[in-house]
Image 1 (cartoon, rainbow, N blue to C red):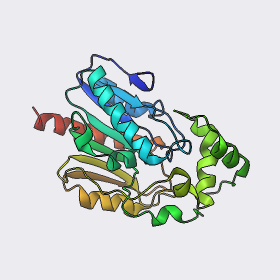
Image 2: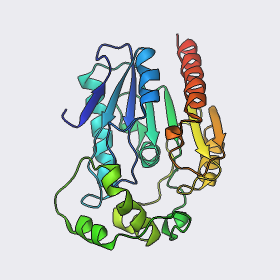
Image 3: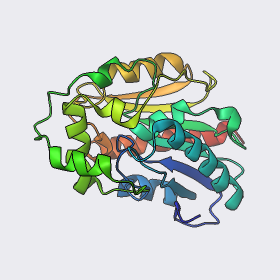
Length: 254
């Protein structure tokens, strides 16, 4: 239970199960923007965030197995009878890569923030060129050779590590990511947000998800930014649209 982080009232009627991003190599369950936390708590949701083991000390297949196990543990430990799965960036990729049949209870909806399915890995192998951060070879070396498994890493401290892997073109091999079909029902209600000019995850990844999930709401932005829910100019719009989506979902399931 130490790696399942509770935010809000444990007795809240509804649940958001949160899988953080960070390229599978950084991030933590506590990094959800305050505006989104407030939206969920004010609408009687508790948030259960997962601190899963991080690459490169474990590879993606092991991470996915651990995430499935942690979801089931959270559902049991907090007596969850309905929930939505929220994944940001690689957290959304993890959601899209697991087998929902392995879950004790399927979610009512998927909330997919600037994420991607593992249908085509070609873009991941390309050296990223449109971000102005230097390569930190020392941090890459020390992190990749460490034997200690980490369950959270500060994005502030490891931001340059992830982007060094991307700019060197070695990120997918470092985390050992593989192609995965999407196994979720195509009718699963889904809320998808992405920026057309995302410098990290190509916009076409969002279009693939929009085409796959036929019962989805798709919110597009034009900022040159990856984590657009950290943008103070548009977070209010995201909160309003997400609240409408969750309210409609609740009414349809009553």
